[in-house]
Image (cartoon, rainbow over the protein chains, first blue to last red):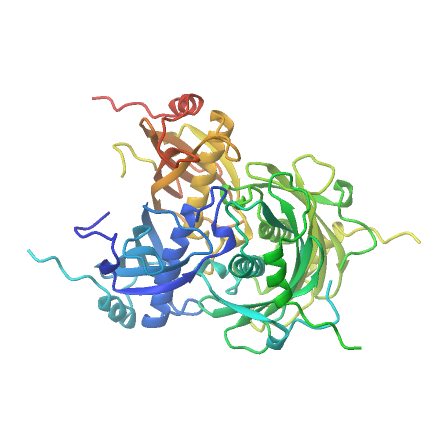
Length: 150
Length: 150
Length: 150
Length: 150
């Protein structure tokens, strides 16, 4: 799923959000469990959509479902590390969007893990895909990566 | 398990820690799931023990197990709310400690939920109770509530 | 919160449900994290209400909120242990119910952990307490403990 | 990451494990959260390695880390659905293995979600890659998909 530019560096991301780690994020092997990174992805992107795009997760008519996701793990993290999630938009369609997300130890220049996932926007009642609402699209465009020069 | 003083107000707590909420903290009913508050308790107290008392969760000889816990729920919270956990020591024994913990919407004067739990310190190898290590005890004493006037 | 009878033994419970443990239930110390037992409580009781009482968690007008909970931990469990949750009704009111729940290693006679929690039934729209719906009440009565002889 | 054969059907998998869903697996939108499927992946594979290959997650010298993962979501599931995880080995290297995993509503012929992930086996102390231990390799070979005819 990876695009032509990497997601491994801080400079690859448009915006960042702090995430506080939790005791139970650490698994038996002493590091944040691989599954938890996807919870960070979900959290960072939904927070962005709510705060910057006006997504109303409780009552809005349009909601977003994840249809696929992927993650590469590079460096272990562990509670109580302070971390940050960087996000950007890789590809913006009519009803779907592909995000790049990187998880960094606070202040680090290289991502501990990074990946991509796709949201499809649907009508909450019919569950059918719909066009991305205008305020959300505007927010997404602000964090879209520039097209590759060629 | 409640002591003679309440745990419902901000003023009841000695120290506070910020916690960022996550998408999946919200359950089907739209609020942070009751179970998750105990994860906040665990996280706030372990972070305090690590940062203020030098608890080494990865390699230390002494670790702390929860032997009982309880929580009262007053006001619902929901992702993406910013929250804080207030903690204090209710009772400090030779090898065990009872904490009071309150979960607040950021800046709120009344707790959304509060409770208590008991840690018993044990030797990591033998799993037998041991005296609370000196630096941890010193940290706990700093957040112990004052004895009730009588 | 404990009543006059214990919750520590298999014979104390009216019905049982199997629960499969998960990799991340184990925390850094190698055992199922204390928080996860409350997830077992929630799961066992809601499954009972759905299957035996007709609770409709997706669309029903009446839902149940946890207002307090408590747990005592006796013996550690760990993934991949097979476990069972025993449940019974401790106290049945007009709009609320107190459950006793015990978590057992599959086949064990003594609970690894046990506790109680209180559900208040509310109208999903108004969030106000309502009488427990008849089919749910009937199911709860079937697992209520007998009054103590005196 | 997908190989030349699909992972969408029951017949694609070598072995199955039952998984019981939990109340909090359902997110605000009423379905099992996308993140939780990765917890199912982790659980199914580790259980297989423990039970069939003798992996000792508590004390063994060799453990397995996830280095990348991916999932495709096709049909929503929801607590209290009974589910099954199907697993097979896609590719078996000297120190790493790629699994295919499918999550099925109990008895269904089409997967609700499926994906792949890679385990690298490492020495618990040095954290360096090591050859997959013989009993684990033998177990993995038993669930490896047949090479494509050509």
